Image (cartoon, rainbow, N blue to C red; front, side, top):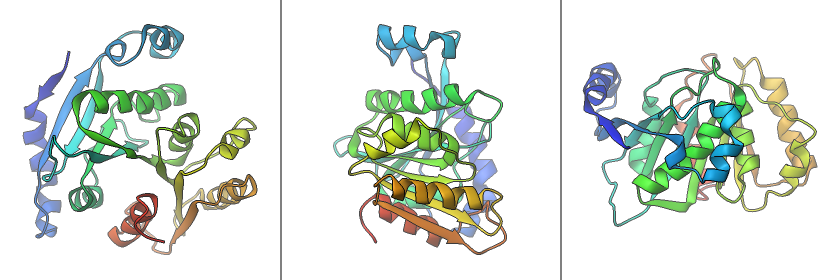
Length: 248
């Protein structure tokens, strides 16, 4: 059963207030917690086949940012965010881009490094069903972004659902990944790395592996700044415009 926790929304306003003050042109819209049990979002067959990963039918909690221009009559794009953190609020750069481009930003809790990779990937995949059930979303604008190790697997497992992605941070490929890359067609992927990224060499290698596997709808963005963890809005805009097919 769906639950809304508006106290979290109030708390988040206090957390983001200093950041929002720096973005005078930004209008904060609606940020909330939502929860639903996995079995309500999966077929019985899917649930049973993933029972060893889920272990129980405990509710999944989502952080959802809904842009001001969201209209139930008009489908919105979606950014499914993966992060090493256990519980986060939307990075201010993502909030701004969500407003400007009509994106719902969503993150499932229990998706951090303390949880298994299989669980984090499954939660990201279940998120699509959660969004379809509760919002009017554009099937051609469902994107994933965040830690490359998890985000890349979500894309490769669901190429007909996740239309674009932004990889950053840790990433790796297995022997099983290459055949899946060859099946990508109209998907668009951005690889982000930089001077301060300890995984920069690996990101470059994986970028070349995608190209060698025949995938050409990709873009490599290199950040020269020392503070890699805070991706400048200009670079993030460039990445989003590429996967949203609005820029080179």
